[in-house]
Length: 330
Image (cartoon, rainbow, N blue to C red; front, side, top):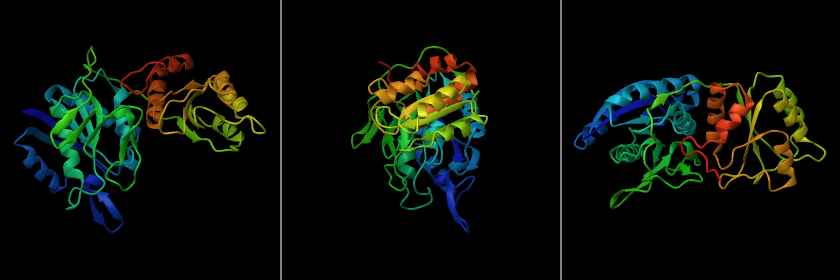
């Protein structure tokens, strides 16, 4: 019987209706019922470490969650973390980088309806998360709507539907079918000792380009204490340089020592800035391509990379490395 630690952090799954709308409750009694029901299959212990709407979960909470996981790893076969859905993909991506050489399952889950609701998707999502631990799917994952997604490949794509998360540019790690859990990821765990590396930099900004973006926005960003900027460019990799030349301003940021990472606004496929003239101009400006990474993974990887090094070439080296399946390298 697998020994599982359930860490709760708040979110919709733990919410109750109040005067000002849904808000998380520290320890809903429905969690106890679920634990009792699954005690025939797993040895589950529960611990509440946060009680927040996930919109309020930031770098301080990422460190707390990562520390809590790291300290508990020796005593459990795996850890399930309940978390609000809105920023779950960011937290799962960040823990992918913070917990290096992770050899046990750490599975995030939550729900679109509170666990106390008779229509809630919470029981099924928790069951999927427990099954992922039971199957030994090492590393960070997101379990939702009977699917198991690599943590650094999960993106929330629906605000209301139960199929809230997509696995972007990466196959599912597993799936619950009528025959049980079908595991698709049979890769071996990484070698080496699991280490906690929670150093990160908060001074990162995300900018989605639109046709006609005013280049002066980069002057404003240069006056702020940002050390890293992620740009969501068009298609395979493009941004305008006629009339409003963005490449010159971006080059100035890079010269100032700001790490500029560029990804695509398209959810699927990889960006390739070498294909078009508009993309090559941005490469010449010294940006770092994000390949087929999700925006969530690019943001958290840049925060984490800037926590490891202050050198732009050091950040580039980290981005050119596939740490835990967040990027496909040619």
